[in-house]
Image (cartoon, rainbow, N blue to C red):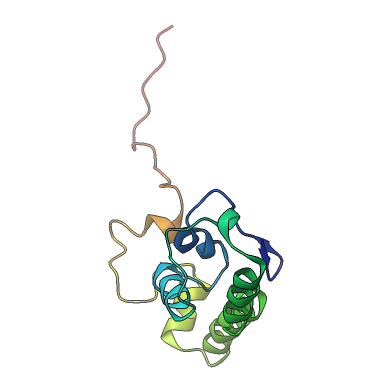
Length: 125
């Protein structure tokens, strides 16, 4: 099954396989399946074509994939353009929500860059 150009895994339960679509998390997947009265533990292989089409229509009614990514990047660009504090943190690739940076923050800052000690050992000759 494909939704918005994303292939949904056939061998996983529906509530987990729908999360492959950017913008659909587990809670939204469960609510979608609840509205359509489809058991979340069923697999994609077991669905009828009517159920597949109903799921596809419901998922595509939300802002997902490319459109959502564009809106998120547009929001970040707006913050940078107005030179807000949050925008400057995004530009510097640092945490934007008040987390500490002396330790931690490795997700944004990347792999730790260790500095060598001040003294070098003398080579034996």
